Amino acid sequence: QVQVVESGGGLVQAGGSLRLSCTASGLTFDNYAMGWFRQAPGKEREGVSCTTWSGTSTYVAASVKGRFTISRDNAKNTLYLQMNTLKPEDTAMYYCATGVSGYCSGDSPFDLRHFNRWGQGTQVTVSS
Image 1 (cartoon, one colour):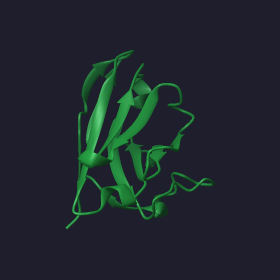
Image 2: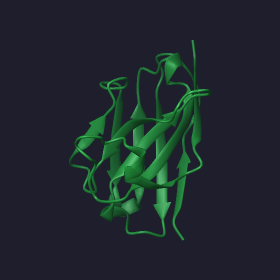
Image 3: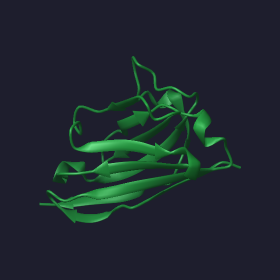
Image 4: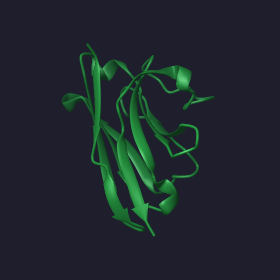
């Protein structure tokens, strides 16, 4: 049974940093692309970043480009999201998901149909 578990969220002041982690078990981790998504209250889930199975190619949403970095450690079955210079508008529940293939779609890397296993999320709150 596949399990996806996020951790590392919390309360931070604007300008601060957090690193989220996501551990996936029950699957061959390095067969799959992995993605980070977020959802704020009353808003749709949006893609934050995607990385291919090897970690050599990544996609980052414009809203977080230059501030957030995705990475993965296939030996540890773990995905990371380093978040710097956090803003109040980054406040959301952050979710990790496994891709349906080893690659992020170049045309639509954050299309939810390209991800099929999701964690329960970790809350990130940025105070002003």
